[in-house]
Length: 221
Image (cartoon, rainbow, N blue to C red; front, side):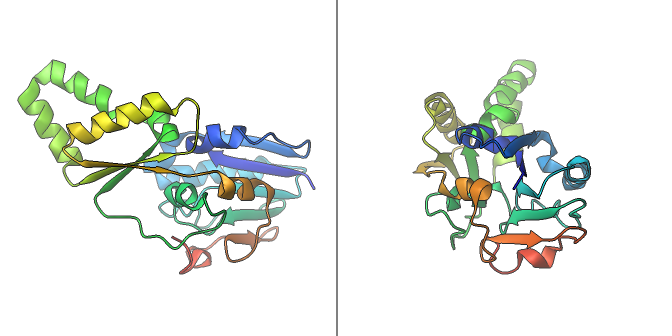
């Protein structure tokens, strides 16, 4: 079975740590779309439409603000985790299945992938500080991140994560938030790629079928 895996680049390092089999092809979508669900939906559909000669396309995404709603399995079967977003994928990975956890309100979730692909809070703050001074820089920072009470760094065992972990601690200090580290493995990410794609943890639709928001159901975390 020939498979194409389309993933958000926030998971690129974790996915590329899994050596691809000859029948697997990986593709990545820029993290820049995550604040623009309609643009992400358009990009994903275009990639799906251009994916010819595969038996299955797998999306390493969640519902992602509604971006997955309405996607059509144009040329072959389509599989996507039954989750709301990438945070759910990372926090489910230790057990290898979708876990019953509740994302905490007021928590800023970070990982190495997020921190190397998104604009840096630290560098943005430094730029504003140099331009407008400390008082206005702190005011802007508080307006943007004042609702966050905790920074939670999701570690995945990367050999390169120590530097960004230190930066995440600096972010917590800067926004006056508590700090926590949770170490996860990549078992669920491996399942996204290799299966089994059971109906409890995944949505599987056949060629020409369309994803609906209801497909993600009450099990989507």
